[in-house]
Amino acid sequence: MKALDELTFDNRFARLGDAFSTHVLPEPLDEPRLVVASKAAMALLDLDPAVAETSVFAELFGGHKLWAEAEPRAMVYSGHQFGGYTPQLGDGRGLLLGEVYNEAGEHWDLHLKGAGMTPYSRMGDGRAVLRSSIREFLASEALHALGIPTSRALCVIGSSTPVWREKQERGAMVLRLAHSHIRFGHFEYFYYTKKSEQQAELAEHVLNLHYPECREQPEPYLAMFREIVERNAEMIAKWQAYGFCHGVMNTDNMSILGITFDFGPFAFLDDFDAHFICNHSDHEGRYSFSNQVPIGQWNLSALAQALTPFISVDALKEALGLYLPLYQAHYLDLMRRRLGLTTAEDADQQLVERLLKLMQNSGVDYTLFLRHLGDEPAALAVARLRDDFVDLAGFDAWAEQYKARVARDGDYTQEQRRERMHAVNPLYILRNYLAQNAIAAAESGDYSEVRRLHDVLTRPFEEQAGMEQYAQRPPDWGKHLEISCSS
Ligand code: AMP
Ligand code: MG
Image (cartoon, rainbow, N blue to C red; front, side, top):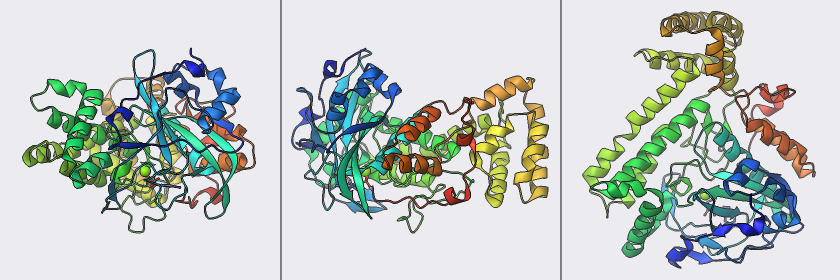
């Protein structure tokens, strides 16, 4: 266990120099205070969880203090936003404080979001509000607990600093952890500005630090791109299987590591809705729930274009061709497991699709249906869940097909079935209304709810005594919350 001043830095990205990032100091928040910290994320840095309660912790992550070895940098990148290319973006309000390596030898970027203006702030104020910082914190830690690759969050620091959005709010900072903060948009920036020397340096940096095994391949860059395609296919399959809607899949928000990254107006589905759009400024539904699958491929094509100096177009196309079949295989595998199936049959895809269509038409709660399907033997479970459906004849036909499929699946006890299904079907997910309750309390200075919700979400598969209220469908007021896109 380490104290805060015992972290070991090795700032590899900063060493790439000024063509890649700019030195900027964090702008401190007034009266910084701890809102919530993740013990699990602290453990990644070998930090003693007790240090979260110290004033130095709030000062460090509220922008007041800095380690002598930290080298705060704002990174430059660009990206395709809603399909159109923006030639220059960059860290407009976040700073890469430095890279820390832990006792296991893993490197973690410390990224402080809401740390003030940078050369890339454009029209923004460099700040993040408490509301969006809490949402990013909860989402990162909740996705991780579900087994979905994601950036992590160490803590949220609140303050008395006023920040203007639609109304006056308070500034906050979230300390994000990831093995890298390099985005698809980094490659696009150097490609479209024709800075070929720096682009080669960036590619070498990513290959050496994050995809070293690809060095062994005859074409290391191609192997790296293939790996990125594979990781994206798997990540998006997990989003779709667990009902996660990212909301802003611009290429500047896509991590080169294939992890969920840069949380904005994200949402987990309550009722199943393939057409759900969580981002209210996404008028055409470009990033609707079901569009995430083709958009994943579109984004990879944008990255491929930026890699044409290193890899032949034919090879890139071939690698891109891996995406959809891999996505489908991962998705179907996850959905089979969520349905409690241990074997594969050709008709399983249709079984899943029919269920989703029925849920869509009846507005059935996606998470709770799958959780309760494992509570009891298949015949009893479907009989109990039947009441949630409007098209009873349709549901009965599906239930017959499902029961027959379960009967063919294997010889196991209900106890085994329940255990297996509950291990992949969460009881607790980060519903928008739950986040909203925690945010409302935190905005009035009470952080107990955000801490409790975080705690519940770190063990989503485990029934927790006294936490029934977190495993309910949303109340009417919480069903169609408009989550502000300003953050
Ligand atoms: P996002 O939609 O949060 O991924 O942000 C897109 C771009 O806008 C990034 O370059 C951000 O750094 C920048 N940005 C977002 N909000 C602000 C803000 N309040 N101040 C400065 N830059 C911002
Ligand atoms: Mg972003």
